Length: 159
Picture (cartoon, rainbow, N blue to C red):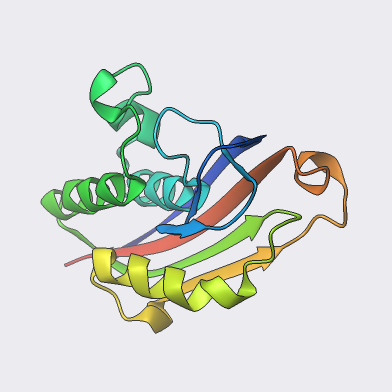
């Protein structure tokens, strides 16, 4: 069995008056992500990790922000398409580990819903998908509430 790991990272600027999508769910907040799609940084980081582990580049290669078809797209659809791409190459997902960096809002109470949402798309058990959240102690762009970032690590296997 061949095992491959991948890492992903995404960041988006936050701006008042936009919807805030994170981990496939809408989060109540006065700010949302400025993006070509819905700006779900967690899903984008997971997509990058999956594509990287499969040796398939990154999310921008497969779903470019210059393509009108992806304008405002629900990132859950991008995650499904990414899963389909890596499966066509013969890979299956073992697990996903991720962290979201943002000062506000506190998302601890939403993490189980995010895990269930993403696990359903990826056909994983929720225990195979970890989401952690941290503030940056008011340091950097996340701490100043100018943006949000996410990191993801995945393990793929090929039979």
